[in-house]
Each structure stands twice: as structure tokens, then as C-alpha cells.
Length: 154
Image (cartoon, rainbow, N blue to C red; front, top):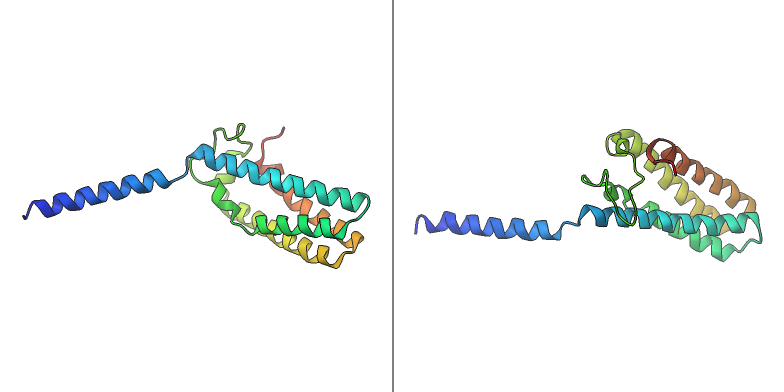
């Protein structure tokens, strides 16, 4: 019985480790999710831009701004998990390896994005087209700041 107990513990640990490993998403799935999130952000940006540059529809802008803020607050950093520095999701990743190394700077940039996205949602709720356009510009600058250093150019 003395030798059976360590054996059972080892078996239990192996089964548990195997189950955990099977639950971890594959890097290519994480890259797909990351790429998908940025496509949704681009879609919402296009909706807002069309409204601030043309016929303004407050409800459309509010929906797009709220969606953008929700995504910004969703913990996008988890989509930059180890093992996703390179590879393919829907297409090759456009993330430069530096985004995985520059933790403080990337965190600051992400914080700015979250702040400006939340501000856009607040401003959109007021329905002032000029104010939305100005805040949308601020949000766009946060995107550009990250893209300049951490996105492979198309």
C-alpha cells in the first residue's frame, strides 16, 4: 500500500496536466481571435467615421462606440500570449515581436486606448457630431501610436 499511494498521485497529476494542456487554446486560435478583434474594431471605426464625415446618426455612433469601448475593456492583452509572437491565424500575424517584450510601454499604450475608447462612448451618448469627431480623432491617435511601433506595415 505504501508504493500504491505515490503511484496514484503520479497518475492523478498526469491526468490533470493532460486535461489542462488540452484546454489551453492553440497559438493559431489565439492569433485568429486577435485578428478578428481588430477586424471588429476596424468595422466599428468605419461606422463612426462615416457618421462624423457624413450624415450623423447618433444611435449608430453610440452602438459602434459602445462596442469599441467594450472590446477595449475586454483584456486584449490576453491575445498576446506566449507562443503567438509569430505564426498564422486567418493570415500571418502582423504583430511585431517587440510587442511581446515592451511590457511597460505596451501597457501604457493599451491604457491610453482604453481611456479614449471609454471617453468616445461617453461623448457619443451626448450626440454632438463635432465632439464625437474630435474624440474619435483622439482614439485614432492611440491606435496609430501602437501600430507605428508594433504592427508590421501592410
